[in-house]
Structures are given as C-alpha cells and as structure tokens.
View (cartoon, rainbow, N blue to C red):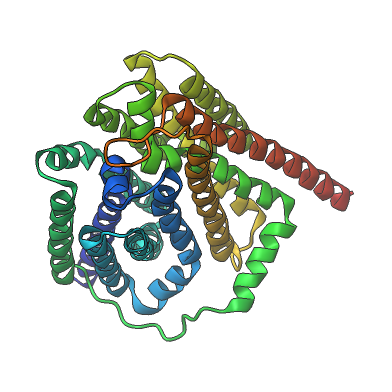
Length: 419
C-alpha cells in the first residue's frame, strides 16, 4: 500500500510541475505574439522591446543554481506554488502597466517564476522514478513544455477579438486555477535543512567548466543550438515572418510555433539515436552545419509557404541537439560535480540567448531608416529585419568554430597527459 501511495505521489508531483512548465512557456512566448501592441502601449523601440525577452532570460539564467538548492531544501510543491505567484505578479504588472520600466519589471518577475520549471521536472524524475524510466519522464516534461506555445494561435484569436490586456488577464485566471489545483493534488515534502547554497562549490564548478576545454566547447555549442530557437520562437519570429514574408499575424504565429513541434518530437528521438550509436560529436557537428544552412536559407531566400514551414520545423529539430551537448559534457564530470557543472552550462546557454535577443533589437534600431506609423511608433522594414537577424547566423557560425577549436585543443591536451 505504501509503495502504491509513493508511486501516486510521484506521478502527481511530476504532473503538477510539468503543468506549471507548460504554463510558464505560454507566458514566456506571449509578448512575441503582440509585439506591435506592446511597442505601441509602452512606446518602445525595437531595442527596448528586446529587453522584455533578454531581462526574462538573464534572470532565468542567473537563478538556475539557487533554484535547484531551493527545490532540494523546500520541496517541489512549495517552490512551484511560489513560482506561479511570481508569474502572476509579473503578468499583472504587465496588464496594468503603461511605462517601459513596468513592462521590464513584469518580465523580471516572470523570469524568476519560470526558472524552477524544468529543474523541478528533472528533480522529481531523478528522485521518484527508476533509472529505466527517468529519462522518459525528463524528455516527456520537456516535450509537454515545448507544446505549450501551440496555445499561441487560440491566444492570438482571443487577442484580435478583444485586446491583449484582456487575453493576458485570461492567462492570469488560468494561473490562479492552476495554483489552487496544485495546492490540492501535489504532495507536500518535508523541509531538508541540509540543502544549502555553497559558493565554494559553485565557484569550483564554474572554474571546472572554464578550465576544461572540452566542457567549455560543449557549453558554447549549447548556445549555438538554443539561441536561434529562443530568439526566433520566443521573441522575434512572428514579427520577422510578418514583415519579411508578408504573412498575416495569425499565420505567422501558427508557422512560428512549428519550431516547438520540431523541438518537442526531436527532444525524445535525436538524443536517443545518438546515445544508442555513441555518436554525440558527429551528431553535434552535423546539427551545427544544418543550423547554419537553415539560417542562411531562412534569411536570404524567397521561400514558399511549404518551404518556410519545413525550415522552421527543421530549426526546431536541430535546436534539440543542445541535449547532446549536455550529455557529452557529462562525460567530463564526476558524480560530485556533475549537477552543478550542468547547471553552470545551462546558465551559460541561456545567457547567450539573452545577449543575442538584445543584439537583434539593438541592430534593428541601428539600421532603422526613420519610418513611423500614425502613432509615432517605429516601423521596421524587411531589409532591417534581415540585417538584425543576421546576427544570429554570425553568432552561431563564429561560436561553433570557436567550440571546435577548443575541443580539438582539449583533446590534444588529454592525449598529451595520457602519453
């Protein structure tokens, strides 16, 4: 009976945190759906609008490791419920705000709230399920979260039928319902007073990443896969497709969300295939070449609707290869350092995405030729979008070459040590 109860608790805990991971993903991508309305409501330039994505990502990255310690100490339920409240506060500030700083503060709250989503899923999977099922539940949680942005189309229909503030209020109502539901169904864990945040351990892991060239190479490669996915899917994709390919917003949003479909499916399949045939490095190299090719085609080709869909799904598939980088990097860690080291790599990955988001907005304003709409809000042309988003291609291309150089250097050093 106790074993059955424990199993039920494990499924309820995993299901609760997975639903929160799904919910926070919808909140994460929502600003990208209403870029024109937000820039008009808060009188933002492209560079200022980029802060709504980059502030979210910077905060999300910085609190990854502290979040893991909080979950270890307080338990998944307490942290998830607190995180939902932070997200609701952030969404409420955005709904009621009228100034740029209020919009930025709202995204900081949402970044803080969202940070524990996937960590919580991994924690429950690692502690509550057998080694034979652990990977499945980790991958399933990621897949569920990545399918969340498919709600973008019905959300956009609601926005166009009412207003963005009304639609975001509906999201808050859903969050409140989710909070009360999880209070009831998620099991409560005892507080673990032994779990504390120790700076020497964090510092040791950071130094280990930067001193081990192979790990540093894989950390850099995670940014090559995650950053294009995040910048296009979470923030700039819809407006780029609208301006460059002359799509209606609802069509642009529908096509952009297909990136998540590609990533969701391949997050389960690609790592499994590469792990089965022990082809981590080859999979990473081919995926990097594929990502560079896809970005070139997307930015500089006149694509049909079918080709555009294919390109975005393929970018989603290739982006999931960041998981290969985490898996490959884990081979250079020990059980004592692996958790914190992988947390540092994840922070590295998300910080790179945040910097690139901000760079796109800065370059849009830099290239802007002075066009404005009737309300005095800046309007950006197709050429200006291509110029700004070309920074993604440069970012992925240059960092990929740096990573290959570091990996070869690290491999040579290891061979010399063995000799």
